[in-house]
Image 1 (cartoon, helix red, strand yellow):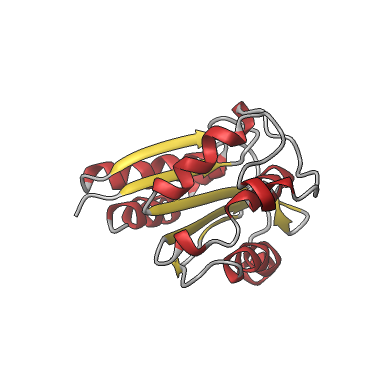
Image 2: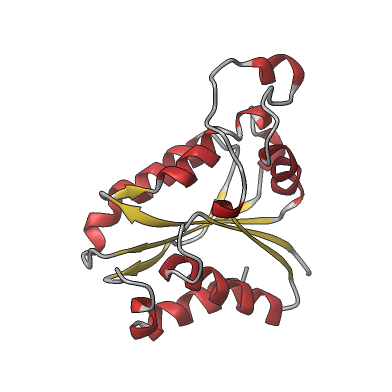
Amino acid sequence: MKKSILILSSSARKGGNSDTLCDAYAQGAKEAGHEVEKIRLAELHIEPCLGCYACEKTGKCAQRDDMAALLPKLVRADVIVLASPVYFYTLCGRLKNFIDRTLPLYPYEGFAGKKWQLIISAAEDAKENMQHAIGDFMGFMECMEEPVIAEPILGIGAWKIGDIEDKPEVIAQAHAAGFSA
């Protein structure tokens, strides 16, 4: 069954390690016949949430930026991939900002049964040190109704651009995850 897959890369570095893993995921998904859209959040203008709760009354954010076009894509997608480099053992600010700005869709009842995938890359090479970043993602998932959460893809031990290329097993994992999305 053909699925609609939305990949949101929050890396500031085009072609960075988490961005490269997104590309591997996308390639696998395309090979499986899925419809794939990859968006680099660094190329969008997304302001931080104001906490004004205007969206609670209107269902729309009071701010006028690129998030308005992104929210309907989240609703339409069957699979949503969130990718982030890990800074100070947590998700990068750009992804956290995006997560905060999904508030107009809350409560997230329309997300029931959607599949979610986390992709992270980090200079740190110990899996146990990724628990804070994974925990941030899982906190977001706690707000969802019946999310289907895929095993996180951990591109650890990859700091400088291209370091992930020395980890073909992680690239293969991302490709396989996309193929089986």
